[in-house]
Amino acid sequence: VFNPLMRKETFMQEAYHLENNNGSINIVGVVFNEMKGAYSNPDSIAGEFAYRSLFPDNEYKYDSGGEPSAIPDLSYEEFVEFHKKYYHPSNCKIFLYGNISTERHLDFLEKNFLSEFAMQKNNITIKNQKRWSKPINLEKTYPVKETAGGAAKDGRGFKNKTTVLINWLTVSATDPYKVLIMEVLEEILIGNAGSPLRKALVESRLGEDLSPVSGLESEIKELVFSVGLRGTDPDKAEEIEELIFKILNEISNIGIDKTIINAAMHSVEFNNREIRGGGSPYALRLMRKALRGWLHGREPDSTLIFNPYIEKLKKKVNEDNHFFEKIISELLLENTHRSRLVVRPDKRDLISEDINKKVRKIEKKLSESDLARLEEKNRILREYLAKPDAPEAIGKLPVLKLKDVPSKVQIIPCDTADLKDRVKYYFHNIYTNGIVYVDIAVDVSDLPEEIAIYLPVFGRAVCRSGIEAISYSDMA
Image 1 (cartoon, rainbow, N blue to C red):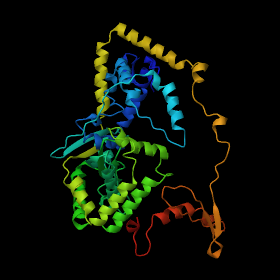
Image 2 (image 1 turned 60 degrees about the vertical axis):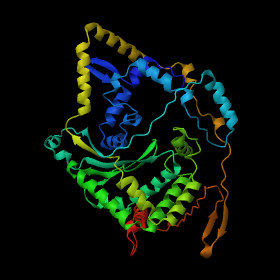
Image 3 (image 1 turned 30 degrees about the vertical axis):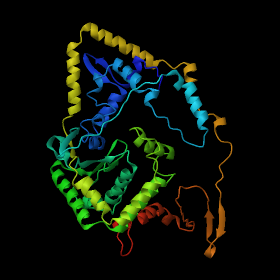
Image 4 (image 1 turned 90 degrees about the horizontal axis):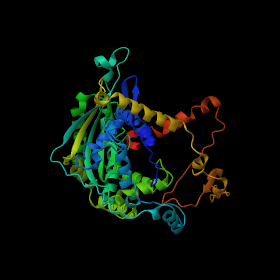
């Protein structure tokens, strides 16, 4: 990270380079092609502009991967200078996790990495977005190729291919109490199939499904809450927005059932406490939570602390029967800093058209000698890519050795007992961060094979079905 080779050939391969294909100039590059692909995917575009649409005045208005049409404007020299300025120990956060010797690891980092650098004063901050007095509408397109039957050409291929999202700029990510409030509100509104806003949108038939972008974006300085539908059409955008605000008004005026609030708080508390879940290693989850405040001038542990804030919220909800209804009014209904994003298909590939215009301008400026130099650069690049790495370079790569693997198997403590009707009971007394897990195993070895093959389907159905007098949406 701190001392990469930064070879020009690496820049040409990873970022972009020009190639002459029988007189026609093409732009080629790993990142360039990846970003072109991202801007051809409607969910990717929706996820990108759901929050970018709300930040016209700070760094969040940019795509960190680079917009495809802008990548060819980057020079190798600018690339090197950017790395020199920002990829510096003065601008990094070091996060260590585990039952380790902190001093020994810090000493290792100092001797092998940090000692060769002098402290810099970059003073890099992201300013808060100035709030709007009225919302905006934004439309983005993604390319749909013409099919053999001409579906894209006559518009039939565009049916139910649009995403509509309403996005709000809400609270600071550096305030753990307000973040917790938004996490619970998200769970109340769209957290499961029975959540009122999610249920109303899905059952409206205005779209095929809730957009996967729906939810809370919490890894930027100010949180963004988004909700909407995919598999819809552009002319339904206003109707979808009206439905969202209608449901939010109803929830705010009629009130939220206490059992829904308690269930949402329980779910959020469970997710924050659980060590084994979350879809990623626990250490990375902790690091992301620490970075919420740490990146913006707060102490790293300030956004890691959870218990005082969940207890504070429980007390507040018990004292104020309309707490979350007020939050809905303040941060959603009365919040004018919001955007309505429509991502629709288009038979034109606007990004490719923009890139092609740029390429044609480059072509006109290239002389015969320029083309010769271009071919020579690409020849050097091909040779560089074809050349195998030296054994001494490969030897520097870290590898896992047998001695690094623990020689002892971890033994989980287990106490056993027989309960009523000879049911075996196993108890594991281990640290679970305040969560009690109960697993019930049923012996199905005597089931006939023709029935046993349906057990996976049965298991999924049981977890997604209601019971007598209680619908699935209420149970969820």
